Amino acid sequence: MLYLIGLGLGDAKDITVKGLEIVRQCSRVYLEAYTSILTVGKEALEEYYGRELVLADRDMVEQEAAEILRGADAEDVAFLVVGDPFGATTHSDLVLRAVNDGIPYRVIHNASIMNAVGCCGLQLYNFGETVSIVFWTDTWRPESFYDKIKKNRDIGMHTLCLLDIKVKEQSMQNLMRGRKIYEPPRYMTVAQAAGQLLEIVQNRRERGDELVLTEETVCVGLARVGAEDQVIQAGALRELASCDLGGPLHSMIVTGHLHPLEVDMLRLFSSQTNGLQSLKMTDSSTYVS
Amino acid sequence: MLYLIGLGLGDAKDITVKGLEIVRQCSRVYLEAYTSILTVGKEALEEYYGRELVLADRDMVEQEAAEILRGADAEDVAFLVVGDPFGATTHSDLVLRAVNDGIPYRVIHNASIMNAVGCCGLQLYNFGETVSIVFWTDTWRPESFYDKIKKNRDIGMHTLCLLDIKVKEQSMQNLMRGRKIYEPPRYMTVAQAAGQLLEIVQNRRERGDELVLTEETVCVGLARVGAEDQVIQAGALRELASCDLGGPLHSMIVTGHLHPLEVDMLRLFSSQTNGLQSLKMTDSSTYVS
Image (cartoon, rainbow over the protein chains, first blue to last red):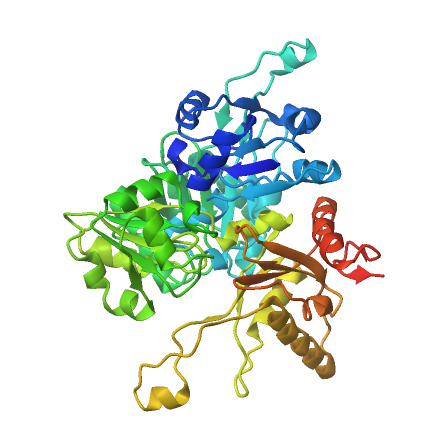
């Protein structure tokens, strides 16, 4: 049996009891390590689970699926995923491969950023399409995520923005020379994401577009959701561009139409952390002072 | 401290290790029992958690919040929620009340139907607004959910439909006589939801509306997601209207634009269960034979 097991979002103890029992009885245990991170590392997980973990990076999952699935028709193999196995990144390829090879599979679900963002008080019901915001480079500055946010806001929906993660990236020089030397991992912060979004707002204003999103649009920055030191900050987009929410992972929400109960909840995360008491949130989801 | 703890979707062992440790050390433990159900009852949870649970129905959570929060500034109180505390139903009221009373709170997340539906292979990224489908009566047949599904499909998004639950309902007779006698709980099936949706499609056709949704639109029925006996069935809307997916809880998805990988995953849940091998899914999200 292939088990796809969600680890949740915080530390080793965010696995479910069922998931832990299965991990402890599997012959081999893989840890997917390229789309998200926990607040603890592989060693802490190994110690708590009492099992050796094989790190599975993107190359391995894509190119060595046969190795992961080896013998799983006769023995139990676990594939651990931070969050939920079908959360922000799905592992459909591995499932399809298993089914094709006659290997039964089972999913042990857990919280993922896709549902845990509800903790900020915005109702999951009212989220539209989720978008990804990638790191801009000097030559590549895609704006497509803005148009998706616009489409959601047009119909009153909130937008969850998942922020870029760069792990096992090679510098151009190392890539050209074929040297497997990797740059330190980079995780986009809420401030960086808000900054890129502000630039697009400015571009669109200069183009004369009708703006559905401005510097004053209410946004929510979230860091380390589900962990002990989770931070949530609600504020105008321009404010989030200069916030410091600490270490990774960060996510951001651009709000759509706000329900009064949602506004009450967001106030918990604005007045407490950054003195926005004097600001009033209006129904049109912008801050007015 | 007030702990809001998600129980996940299956049975007693779907709680996280962290959640279980907290439940076992709290002075009082409440179980929210009106928006969802596990495959096991209160007694099984009590035995596994080793704690007595107080059932909290809607009246209690709304009217006796003070009792739930009593003493939580000095001792630990747990409020257990099937799925995630901020999943389909949020518990913002209780959180706001706690904060107002100076009681710290913490959320222990878990899987909820809002993210676990990803197990059918449709990408959570591509879901629009979630809708609720309520039981129609002879005199009350709201069609508003159709318009939300339409809005999602217009922009290519999938729609998760949460299906009605009626617990602690009184008959009109018992209600008028003030007798606290409750009808047996009712849980909407995928077949019932699909049937109501088909009626609306027919109504709109007769009105001459342009249809964005027909009898042939690809839908997915899900039953007992996360439990051992979970069932997923993909098929045309008209087919789901006569399917039998067994006991509660059921949910349904109306697909939007389908990505090829999503089609491959959905095939796993059509050919296996109901002989749809001969049908071909097209990009426009309708079945053609």
